[in-house]
Image (cartoon, rainbow, N blue to C red; front, top):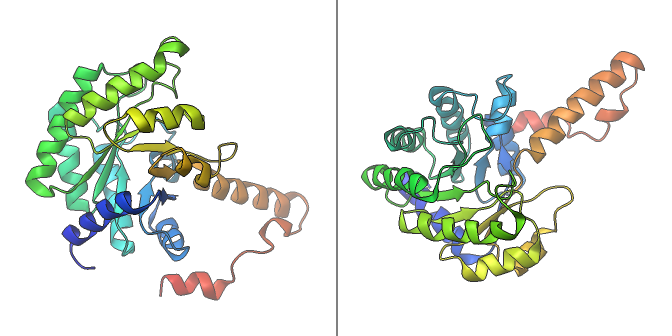
Length: 273
């Protein structure tokens, strides 16, 4: 699979055949590890990328910094890559369009765009965000028409509005975002399978969920109609936790229990040979 077009076509097919599980990478090395585990595609995690650059999550990176990492990841693996580009690195639709063009140039075939404003827990209105998605789709059409746009809404994650009204808010956004060119609706913070099932039945575009420890297994999410599952920063958190605990153990106890069971040097080194 040599062309970006081929990867874009495959990525679309993966959404149509079965639930698509996307482990999230944060640098080229983690992407290779995930690919070697059998992932048919890889999603990036903005939180993990931020941590790797010693920043906190929450849209603290520049467009150039994020695109550099996306390009490194896309170049390191053969499978399709979809890029978490946070809020698009600018409020204006033109800024989102510039980011999408950069993502395509970096070699990714999908984007994850959120509707929260950088550094706040406030959301763009559906119409405001629709303008941003319209610009994203126009930029994609000019560069890679099959680019998959995953429309993230943070209604549940940030607890926006009264609980009783959140489902209707998300459904409204799904419909508006679909009309503006989004391919799927992504609802972090929502793991209730009954609510997800209702959303999957009502939404005009496929539903994507963020899972991890404490969430239902992928099989339950798939049974509810969820078409795409990612794990956000979970794998990056586990990796950083291991580094922290292993370092603390060897520094304080002089023992190596935390790293027992790790893949051998030759295996890992062989991934990059």
